[in-house]
Image (cartoon, rainbow, N blue to C red; front, side, top):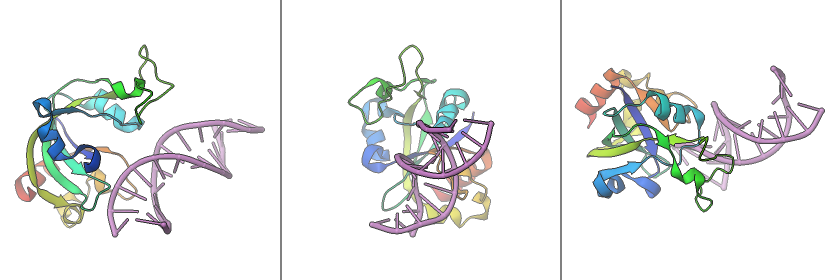
Length: 152
DNA sequence: GCCAACGTTGGC
DNA sequence: GCCAACGTTGGC
């Protein structure tokens, strides 16, 4: 059982989109970074906790809680020439990009980035590290507990 | 294998 | 729109 922070652009997939999806579940498509892929492929397990983070938007921050509900499988968008996430170098025999399904747990009052930064308990959070660009980052159990119990 | 050039992320 | 930081690409 692990914990993660996963960034999504709310224009594309917000916490409300997740809540409205069939089975309140969405495949985490579009990750095209090897480190983030490896987290999904190698480290995630069913039942892992997810902090659902809105990025590249007027109010970046944690917008809800979700959970991992599948093992890793190939991201279908990599095979679709019409998709912005198409990868011509990936084949069905040896797919390059893997993803997991994520299910809605609850929407929370937005916890803005600045509020996360204001807490010394969260100073080591990977997502807050200078220069971090990873869209999926590990969250420690202490960080998870602090955020879910104190901030949301 | 090096590394310069280029592309992307994402907060501001 | 700016730009810091980082990842990827490709020539050599």
